[in-house]
Image (tube, rainbow, N blue to C red; front, side, top):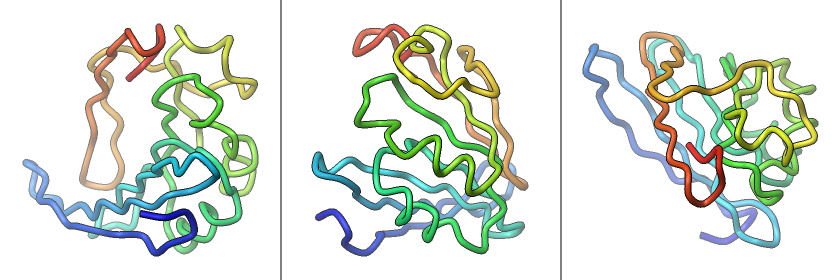
Length: 137
Protein backbone atom coordinates (compact mmCIF):
# COMPACT_ATOMS: atom_id res chain seq x y z
CA UNK A 1 0.00 0.00 0.00
CA UNK A 2 1.54 3.30 -1.07
CA UNK A 3 1.16 6.60 0.80
CA UNK A 4 -1.77 8.62 -0.53
CA UNK A 5 -3.30 5.45 -1.99
CA UNK A 6 -6.90 4.60 -1.21
CA UNK A 7 -7.86 3.11 2.13
CA UNK A 8 -8.71 -0.57 2.17
CA UNK A 9 -11.59 -1.70 4.34
CA UNK A 10 -13.10 -4.85 5.76
CA UNK A 11 -16.01 -5.39 8.09
CA UNK A 12 -15.90 -7.56 11.19
CA UNK A 13 -18.66 -8.54 13.57
CA UNK A 14 -18.01 -7.71 17.20
CA UNK A 15 -19.00 -10.29 19.81
CA UNK A 16 -21.60 -7.90 21.24
CA UNK A 17 -23.43 -7.73 17.92
CA UNK A 18 -21.77 -4.60 16.54
CA UNK A 19 -20.42 -4.49 13.02
CA UNK A 20 -17.06 -2.70 12.75
CA UNK A 21 -15.46 -1.47 9.57
CA UNK A 22 -11.67 -1.61 9.77
CA UNK A 23 -10.01 0.87 7.42
CA UNK A 24 -6.27 0.85 6.78
CA UNK A 25 -4.34 3.48 4.88
CA UNK A 26 -0.72 4.49 4.57
CA UNK A 27 0.82 7.91 5.21
CA UNK A 28 4.18 9.65 5.12
CA UNK A 29 7.63 8.86 3.83
CA UNK A 30 7.95 5.80 6.08
CA UNK A 31 4.72 4.35 4.66
CA UNK A 32 3.15 4.06 8.14
CA UNK A 33 -0.21 2.38 8.55
CA UNK A 34 -3.09 4.25 10.12
CA UNK A 35 -6.16 2.29 11.21
CA UNK A 36 -9.67 3.63 11.57
CA UNK A 37 -12.19 1.45 13.40
CA UNK A 38 -15.78 2.48 12.69
CA UNK A 39 -18.87 1.16 14.47
CA UNK A 40 -21.13 0.91 11.44
CA UNK A 41 -24.33 1.35 13.43
CA UNK A 42 -23.43 4.63 15.14
CA UNK A 43 -20.61 6.14 13.08
CA UNK A 44 -18.46 6.35 16.23
CA UNK A 45 -14.82 5.62 15.46
CA UNK A 46 -11.35 5.12 16.91
CA UNK A 47 -8.18 6.19 15.13
CA UNK A 48 -5.00 4.19 15.70
CA UNK A 49 -1.73 6.10 15.14
CA UNK A 50 -1.95 9.62 13.73
CA UNK A 51 1.35 8.85 12.06
CA UNK A 52 1.77 11.59 9.44
CA UNK A 53 -0.18 13.66 6.90
CA UNK A 54 -2.78 15.29 9.17
CA UNK A 55 -4.82 16.54 6.22
CA UNK A 56 -5.26 13.01 4.87
CA UNK A 57 -6.24 11.65 8.27
CA UNK A 58 -8.73 14.45 8.90
CA UNK A 59 -10.25 13.80 5.47
CA UNK A 60 -10.59 10.08 6.28
CA UNK A 61 -12.44 10.78 9.55
CA UNK A 62 -14.70 13.45 8.03
CA UNK A 63 -18.33 12.73 8.85
CA UNK A 64 -17.48 10.32 11.67
CA UNK A 65 -17.79 10.90 15.39
CA UNK A 66 -14.22 10.23 16.54
CA UNK A 67 -14.24 8.76 20.06
CA UNK A 68 -10.46 8.80 20.44
CA UNK A 69 -6.98 8.62 19.00
CA UNK A 70 -4.77 5.80 20.25
CA UNK A 71 -0.99 6.07 19.88
CA UNK A 72 0.49 2.56 19.90
CA UNK A 73 3.96 3.67 20.96
CA UNK A 74 6.20 6.71 21.24
CA UNK A 75 8.34 6.52 18.11
CA UNK A 76 8.02 9.73 16.10
CA UNK A 77 6.72 8.05 12.96
CA UNK A 78 3.57 7.04 14.88
CA UNK A 79 2.52 10.45 16.22
CA UNK A 80 3.71 13.22 13.86
CA UNK A 81 0.14 14.27 12.98
CA UNK A 82 -1.29 13.72 16.47
CA UNK A 83 -1.45 17.36 17.60
CA UNK A 84 -3.07 18.57 14.40
CA UNK A 85 -5.55 15.69 14.11
CA UNK A 86 -6.55 15.96 17.76
CA UNK A 87 -7.03 19.70 17.45
CA UNK A 88 -9.00 19.42 14.20
CA UNK A 89 -11.33 16.71 15.50
CA UNK A 90 -11.51 17.47 19.21
CA UNK A 91 -10.97 13.75 19.86
CA UNK A 92 -9.31 12.70 23.12
CA UNK A 93 -5.88 11.06 22.94
CA UNK A 94 -4.65 7.84 24.54
CA UNK A 95 -1.03 6.87 25.29
CA UNK A 96 0.67 4.50 27.71
CA UNK A 97 2.59 6.48 30.36
CA UNK A 98 5.73 4.45 29.62
CA UNK A 99 6.10 6.46 26.39
CA UNK A 100 4.85 9.86 27.61
CA UNK A 101 8.35 11.39 27.52
CA UNK A 102 8.68 10.43 23.84
CA UNK A 103 5.52 12.18 22.62
CA UNK A 104 5.21 15.99 22.79
CA UNK A 105 1.41 15.83 22.98
CA UNK A 106 0.15 15.19 26.50
CA UNK A 107 -2.38 12.36 26.45
CA UNK A 108 -5.89 12.99 27.68
CA UNK A 109 -6.02 9.40 28.93
CA UNK A 110 -3.28 7.04 30.10
CA UNK A 111 -3.51 3.55 28.68
CA UNK A 112 -3.37 0.66 31.14
CA UNK A 113 -3.20 -3.03 30.30
CA UNK A 114 -6.65 -4.49 29.61
CA UNK A 115 -8.20 -1.01 29.34
CA UNK A 116 -11.35 -0.97 27.22
CA UNK A 117 -12.36 1.88 24.96
CA UNK A 118 -15.92 1.96 23.67
CA UNK A 119 -16.97 3.51 20.38
CA UNK A 120 -20.64 3.13 19.64
CA UNK A 121 -21.71 -0.46 20.30
CA UNK A 122 -18.15 -1.72 19.80
CA UNK A 123 -15.08 -1.67 22.00
CA UNK A 124 -11.39 -2.51 21.90
CA UNK A 125 -9.29 -3.95 24.70
CA UNK A 126 -5.76 -2.56 24.82
CA UNK A 127 -2.88 -4.87 25.66
CA UNK A 128 0.37 -3.45 27.04
CA UNK A 129 3.22 -5.11 25.11
CA UNK A 130 6.51 -3.54 26.28
CA UNK A 131 9.57 -4.39 24.25
CA UNK A 132 9.56 -2.23 21.14
CA UNK A 133 9.16 0.66 23.60
CA UNK A 134 8.25 0.69 27.31
CA UNK A 135 4.74 1.84 26.52
CA UNK A 136 3.93 -0.22 23.43
CA UNK A 137 0.31 -1.34 23.17
